[in-house]
Image (tube, rainbow, N blue to C red; front, side, top):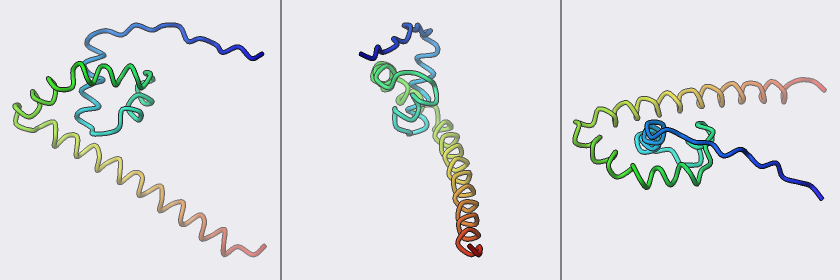
Length: 101
C-alpha cells in the first residue's frame, strides 16, 4: 500500500490572506491559477476570496479604479509574453518541418 505524505499544516498572516485575496480580485485570474502561483491550496484561497473579496472589490472601485488599470497592464504584459513564446514555438516547428530527414 502506498502512503500519502501529509503536508504540514501551514499558517498564514491576516495580511498575506488579504493580499492573496486582493490579487485574485484585481487580476481576474481563476483562483486555481493564483493558488498555484502563491503555493496555497485552491480551497484555502477560495475561502479567503469569499471572506475578503467583497470588501476589496468595493474599496478598489471607490478608489478611482487605479488598481483596475494596473491589473489590465499586468494582463497585457502576460499576454504579450505568451504571444512571444507562441511565436518562437511556431518558428521552431516550421524549422523542424522543413528540415531534411
